[in-house]
Length: 131
Image (cartoon, rainbow, N blue to C red; front, top):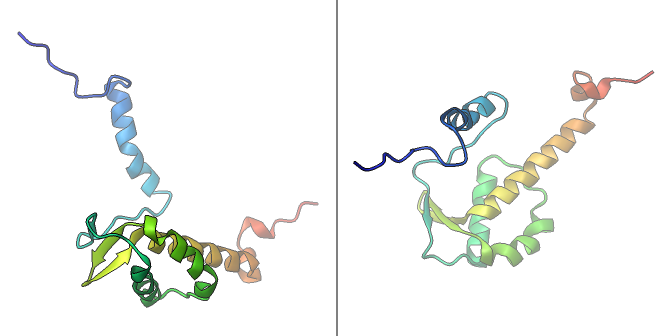
């Protein structure tokens, strides 16, 4: 008779495994998680280059994003574009990590704008004055 292999990893018990697998569900109640759309296809055979950058910037701005920082970061994005991954969505190819970087920059700008807004601060701990 052959031994039945444990379907759990050797470094954790069954309970620990189930606990680990439940974290995404628990975390999603606290933070916003993103899932890629099903019609996004990654192309490992297509080499990423600077030709994909204008399309990526255009696509990012078409998603109702305010891209006032485009000129400031474009040369940096161009220099790292050769290390990026190309994905295909709605009949065009875009740079995946560049798109994510643009999103992080936009979120940071939005957070900074909110942090400077007095009306927003009034309803947060930012309004707390230590006496």
